[in-house]
Image (cartoon, rainbow, N blue to C red; front, side, top):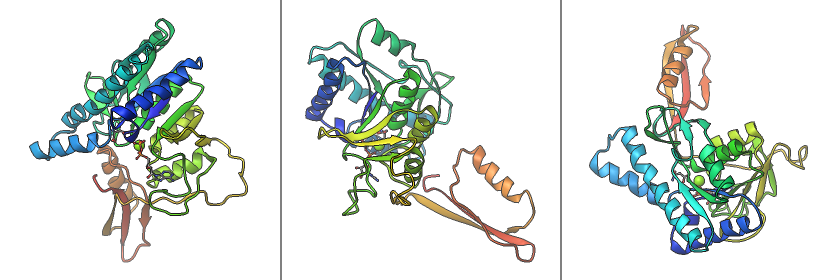
Amino acid sequence: VQKFGGTAVANAERLRNVAEIIAETYRQGNQVVAVLSAQGDTTDDLIEKAQEINPKASRREMDMLLSTGEQISCSLCAMAVEALGLPVVSLTGWQAGVQTNSSYSSARIKKIDVERIQSEIDRNHSIVIVTGFQGINKYGDITTLGRGGSDTSAVALAAALKADLCQIYTDVDGIYTADPRHVKGARKLEEITFDEMLELASLGAQVLHNRSVELAKKYQVNLEVLSSFERKPGTKVKEVAKNMEKTQISGVATDKNVARLALVGVEDRPGIAYKVFSLLGQKNINVDIIVQSIGRQGTQDISFTVRRSD
Ligand code: ADP
Ligand code: ASP
Ligand code: MG
């Protein structure tokens, strides 16, 4: 399974380059499923278009809109592979059997029915190109997995297909000790453990969607992050890395998309925190860091962080 991010598929020339990478892998005798993001800033542009019409658009309609970006890049990429004379078919999330729950705009994959993909591979010896970021819920509606979700689509497909390897092609040549676009002197890592990467991704290193790392760990997917522009080895993400005992800190991440809330002077009684966090849970709002102060005169403060958009 090879995933290509937005920059990698941004224009015709880059799509041809991606088609070459896919074709090369296929010609080496591999069965290839490619998972694509939308081109360049397409997803941001679509969000902007929606804002112009209705800033309070429902999440269902947002998903209907945003999923189109991936459909465009996939069909174009399939055309580029066709031009190389290889058998290829592009599929949307529902055609590929990606079933999700109904949390529009942050849907979770429940199951992937790989029958269609498998038959394209086995019967037609086809290269299969699948839209990242999207699936379908039990009502037959299109859902999306949340920003950056194509990584998760790719790893989930790799797990479902029991793929030998899942390659995440992006605009940097691997995982660094810090974001190489912002930190001079950040070093490229040859490998990193699932746990370390999960921590980095959850703290804002967008190079991998954190749920993709969670899935890769759960299903022991052989994962690699590498450049779509330069042909050279990237970073392996795996269960145990070589320098297990040596490195104490493998990377640093920042996240500006965080909001901190404080409930000041809430009643200091067992069950209050449960009430607060279960309400947030019901609304699918993820809470990250929680700090509770010590009680004073029967009250206490509860501070926590959530995504700014939530
Ligand atoms: P894609 O469109 O391929 O999914 P993303 O923009 O989502 O690409 O992720 C790649 C970006 O992640 C890089 O351009 C880089 O700026 C950023 N990044 C943040 N932290 C790291 C890190 N530790 N190592 C590598 N890249 C990082
Ligand atoms: N196109 C989606 C986004 O921009 C998904 C992805 O690229 O991973 O968030
Ligand atoms: Mg990404």
